[in-house]
Image: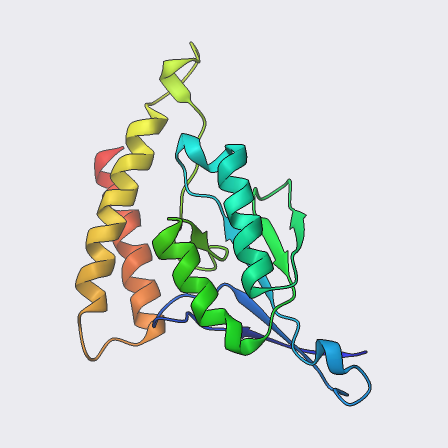
Length: 174
C-alpha cells in the first residue's frame, strides 16, 4: 500500500516525534489503516539500557502498539513500529511520565543531548564536554520555558528563540 506521510505534532502541545502513516486504501488493508512510527530516545541515565527498562518499554509498546521494534544504531533511537492514532496520547503519557523517556528526534530543537566522556577519560580533550552538555541543556531549558509561556509565540518563534539562546550561551561560556 502507499502511505500518506505526515508528522503528528506533540501530543501535549509542542514537539514532533511521531511519524504519521495512514494507508490511502484502508478498505484493502484494514489491519493497518493507521501504522504510526514512534522514535523513542532513551534518557541519559544508567538505568535506560538496563534490561528491566527495555522490558518495560517493550511491555508498554505491546500495550499501546504492535510490539514490533527497530533498534536504530546510528542515532541511538529505539523505533517503535505500528500503532493507531487513538493509542498515541496514552502511550506518550506512559512513556514520558511513567518511564522518563523522551519522544522523537530533535528536529530543530535540542533534545536529550549526548556527548563524549571528555576530560574524565580522554587526555587529549580540549574542553569539559560534560560541563558543556550540562550548561547548554540548563540554558536551553530556561530559554524554552520563558518563550513557551508567552501567549503570542508561534512554534517557529519558539524554535528560533531556543536556538538563538543556546548559541549565545555557547559563545559566551565555552
